[in-house]
Length: 231
Image (cartoon, rainbow, N blue to C red; front, side):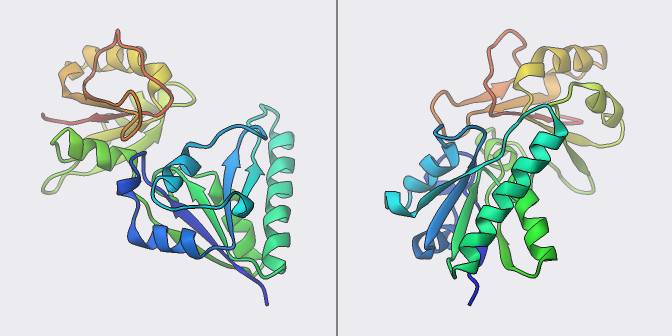
């Protein structure tokens, strides 16, 4: 009998943000897998999970997803990662694969999930709290109110997309914005909206910052920005 794969969102940082379901499934799993860009590196998602669940070393498996700029290399790596997961499922193992935040928002897990569904495997996604929701709560702001809408975009490829969508949504969430904070600040300043942004960095982790957009401050990789139509 084949096993089952759970893709589990562990939230943005604080283990107390993990859901009861996530904790239970990690405890029950035969294997706890986590994606890495390089074999042997640490995992924030695993550290978060271990803050809530005791996970024996023998249950832990790395799954490599290279960030090589060559698309063919990335696709080959994803195929190998999926084959590794398939092999464990074929052995009847129940797998909990971890991801930061919510499992369905820019998650590496999605590459494996899509293939396994297509190939008839039993898979389930388990929601977690996204950083922008946790951070907005810490900042004491709501992301949307009444009939407002909001959009979520990545900034990992620059700020062109941000410029395009600012007029399309009442409010905007920009994820992984750390390297582009100054550029986004200049865009907002031109529009008179520089005071309408809240920066959420390392929520629940060391060096947490939740506050106004400061273009001169250094921000890390886990940085999100919420831009409100009106503050």
